[in-house]
Length: 400
Ligand SMILES: Cc1ncc(COP(=O)(O)O)c(C=O)c1O
Image 1: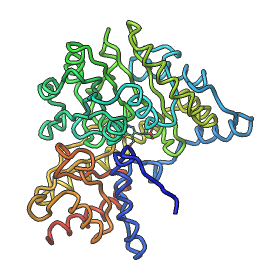
Image 2: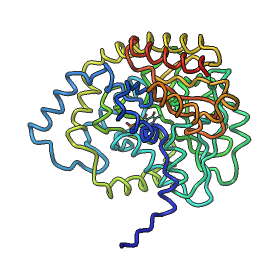
Image 3: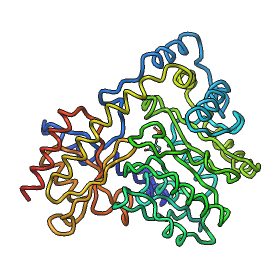
């Protein structure tokens, strides 16, 4: 027998969004019809990668772009990102301050590894996109979630944010538009968050992977508002450019006073040790940013119809309350009878799955405080599938 000891660190790794599939495994074997509303992957539904982006990948492979790229990424892509950030988000950065990653996920890991160590805290939205929590724990730090208020469409509570800053806080994470709540932070709110960061000399990390998927107007990129405050922006190609499986993302250092160069150097070391992001995918990324953008409007308009439908149907179910998502493609409804009919949101999600084949993510999997009593669903499927899934959810709740 070999003696295998698994680290404590590995036990901190949780990713509820995919961990729930473990439960689904047994059920699929029974042949039950499944509704996968757990993963935010538009490409798995009827949102294929645009043809010109696919063609660019094929051409990259055929023309021999199959070698390792520089660790920080292909220069032309970094330049295309500078143009995109200026055009779409009004953010001015230099190509030197843009680093390419294998998805935003990798960027999150690299940043947290470079920023957090034992005893450090990081402020994350409550509830956050899970890796911000998990990686902070993996790197021996403590994630602290600041309240976002359901009754205000999940806008951050600035007073709560301020009250949670301590000597050991290393950064504030903003995720706008937000996963898992579908919130779109108002310009005024982002300004207030930046003011709080400025008062305490805190770095802001701003995850804007859903930047172009919005259903209301009042949105501005954090770095556009930051003036002389430094911001690290995280963004990628998975959602807006429908390239989920290709694993391509980026981070930029908006660094008006040259305060982020040491952090950038630390991240660059992380980049070198993992060699590079996929070179053909990077070439396709250039085509995505510089080619036609028509698919973005189509994507948002199709999603808007599905959002309206899912939100309305959920609110019609007695015992469910759902804030209206204003960005991204998630709803985060409250299940009012968690605590009585179901002990926890996890129990609700597991029973729902077993009985109906509808796979949701339990809210406490994102955040035991601000996510509890909720579930997250994607509204990516076509209306006829959403309708079937929502009928199942309704029947399940009524029956109990
Ligand atoms: C807020 C947020 N950040 C990052 C990611 C990871 O995206 P990527 O596919 O670029 O790793 C996701 C994916 O769902 C997300 O919702």
